[in-house]
Image (cartoon, rainbow, N blue to C red; front, side):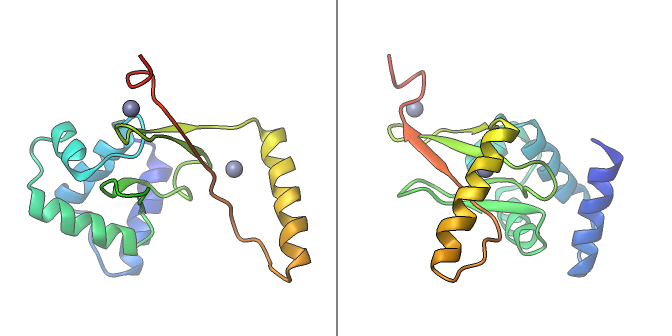
Length: 145
Ligand SMILES: [Zn+2]
Ligand SMILES: [Zn+2]
């Protein structure tokens, strides 16, 4: 894992008086290896040495610390990924049949257009934009066949 990512994680955990324990490191590495946001059972399958109870608790603590982002789409189980501030800005493709979620990156030019558009519609309502999140729903390759 990149040293600067590691340093950012340690700083964030330190900010809420948490140590970067072996268990937390294993979670971060599992999330880093996943192809997209994962449910707790998927994370446990990726990192078999994790115990379910401590993994769940550590995910919640790391969410508070800003290391992990928790996503909830409809009735699906919560999914977890590394916080965008630690990785990069992206969007999600969500399968409405099986619930799988994939990360997608848009062209920088498209993101600038989106930001400009959101700034305009928000300003009309007296809002200031902090960030945007866009989810795209449909069927994944497996469910589409
Ligand atoms: Zn699917
Ligand atoms: Zn975006």
